[in-house]
Each structure stands twice: as structure tokens, then as C-alpha cells.
Length: 97
Image 1 (cartoon, rainbow, N blue to C red):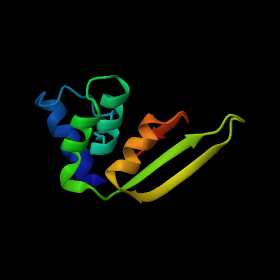
Image 2: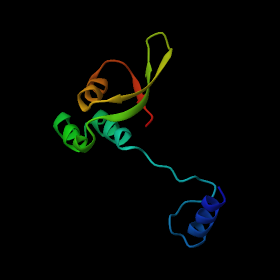
Image 3: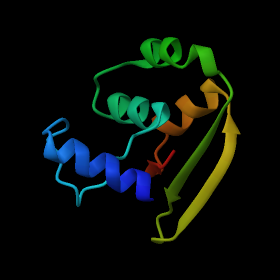
């Protein structure tokens, strides 16, 4: 934690990231970015398959929302085809990682 604070302080003082020190640095996984781009129509099935090709089997952590407002946490290894089916399905989901 101390190293992170030092990095954030240094980068803030030198305006390297344009991020105030109170905001943490975070990242989005490849699957989160692919899911978002697919949902927004920025990429189609072919592009998603191509972009995920180096990692056909990948751990996916997501939450699927049911009609009764309950949620089902999912933490599994998914093939690209299964990942695509999740994205194309009718169930609302949030890819976490």
C-alpha cells in the first residue's frame, strides 16, 4: 500500500496521470472491455472471436441478474463460444473480471 501511495503522490505532483491521489488506479480486464464493446455494437461476433483467440479458455467472473431481482454469481472458465452466448443471451449480466 505504501508503494502505491508513493507512486500516486509522485504522479500527481508531476502531473503524469492527471489523476488526483485520492482516486485509485484500476483496470478493466480484456473480457470486460470485449463485453462492453460488444454490447455497444462497437464489435461484432467475428471481431470478438478474433480478439479473444489467444485465450479461448479464460476465467470469467460475472453476475447474472434473474427476473426476480436475485443475482447469481458465476466464477468459471469459459470457452469463447460460451462467453459469446452469455453476451448474446437475454439475461442481464455484469462481467466483473
